[in-house]
Amino acid sequence: MKKLLCIALTVCLLATCACLTLVACSQDRMKQAIKYGDNYTIVASYDDEAHVLSATQTVTLTNRSENSFPAVKFHIYANQYREDATNGVVPNMYVQRAYPNGLSYGDITFDSVKVDGSAVAYTIEGTDMDILSVPLAAELFPNQKVTIEMTYQVTLANICHRLGYTDNAVNLGNFYPVLCHVDNGSYSTTPYYNVGDPFVSDVANYNVSLTVPDSYLVASTGNIVEVSSLNGCSVYKYTANAVRDFAFVLSQNFKKLTSTVGNTQVNYYYIADADAEASLATAVGMLNYLNKNVGIYPYEQYSVVETDFCYGGMEYPCMSMVTSGSTSYQEAIAHETAHQWFYGLVGNNQITNAWMDEGLSEFVTYLYMDSTGATSLSRSMLGCYQTYTSYVDVLSNYYSDVDRSMRAVNEYKNDSEYVIFTYVKGALLFNSVYEAMGSTRFWKALANYYDEGLFTVAEPSLMTGCFANAGGKEIEAIFTNFIEGKEIIGKLTD
Image (cartoon, rainbow, N blue to C red; front, top):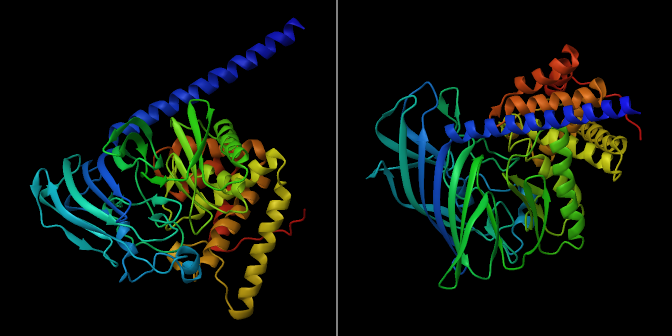
């Protein structure tokens, strides 16, 4: 008995040491990400009568590439909501759902842009007027810094989308000019595609202030530093370090539930969810599940927010939107919470390789649902198999050569095809890897991917390498065959 007790205590001690080591490693990586991240300061106020957000923004950035730049480029996603936008902000099949009160438009306009304190003649560029180009007095060489200040107004459309207002809430996602990701030594100025999540962004540090009428409760990325009152308004001040972007949701109808997972406060802001306690429990459960199996969530707060949104949900750092009136709150919450790790902590190019975060988050959601007894993994994967094969069969009736590859979001014919190949086939890909490797090696590979990709924009080679290292070279072939459309999926049964 004494021997068994000693063994048990030793195992316990080793597990505790391992856990503490992982936490310390994560904290060290976060300190490094904060040190090398660019810095945003945003002071904003929202006029709920005009539906206009006014802001002053300062960005101090360092050229981390090996090239020099004569100008700095920002995505201005808010301009995609313009009436004359070439590419509508939602696919045609979602227009009625996105605009329940009829078509509505918004944009972003600039009062001034300064570089190191001097006004400059900025230009609005891009295929759809969605890039802000800020010229520099002298080229920005590697490791040099520059500070850019801008004042602007964002006019919101009446739309159930990432950025817009509805009868129930105000969604402020992707509202501010964000630095274009530097890829292979040049700025990536890809347009705002209305299929998928057309974003690639690096982690940065944020200090943000938002002034809203007192009647609003605010959910956001980051930690609340202070809330004060000013002339019938509330002023919320936040900090958020090493995050990929920053978003708010405001509502006069929010109710709030709170729990804790480790060092993270978990909030659920809801409007009409009839089982809010269960929804909060799902967020808590998924955070615990991924803390245990992948890596410790390093942020101090995470909020799930029920809001009006035309899709099932949308992930932001430290915050997830889920669609009000959903028939599957808990599955949506689990999926968006998985994105906190896969997109938020370990980034990827969501345009060219959406399967890396969407397919993985979907499969991890199925694993979690299986672990809770909600839905067996076999039943979930049978549903994916039937959906995917039926879709391919239908396409085969119309096209002699069906492209089954997993490709960039703008290369799909429509949103339905994107969903089938990114979420459904993506889940089937990771299920095939899971079956080939087994649970222990699968989670080991995923933990290694988290550790190596933390706070970076990971390439597919990093993911496939982590899985191949844990499961053998044949695992790499599974990824290749699925991505290239050469996969062979055995018939699945429940």
